[in-house]
Length: 154
Image (tube, helix red, strand yellow):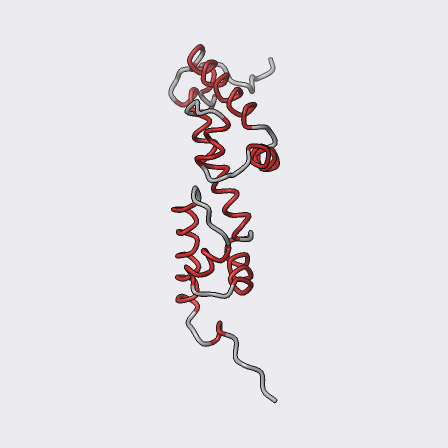
């Protein structure tokens, strides 16, 4: 009895990659909507389980993990622009502030409100002393700093 040939062997790899990229772009463009694995896999024309295996082999994380990461990245941008945590949560596609806060902390190491406060504090420090945020190697190259960290001993 012979086994059926896997679909991967029937199509060129570039065709399979194209379908996976199409699904990734679907996530990138619809992250804020209520999308699930069925929606994403259907975009790539794969079964759910086959799609998960292929996606993870190419992108290093499951489609769900990737969706969470995209949402967290967009949430960071909204928080930087002074959106409230609740507003940010719903704009990026989460249904619960509690789950949003937990996932945000898991991915960034801080809560959304702490992230926002830290960002605002850093912006204030940059405004107060902008030259302290320029790397020394760049400042020395431009002649703005004459001293070096490595001074010759006499």
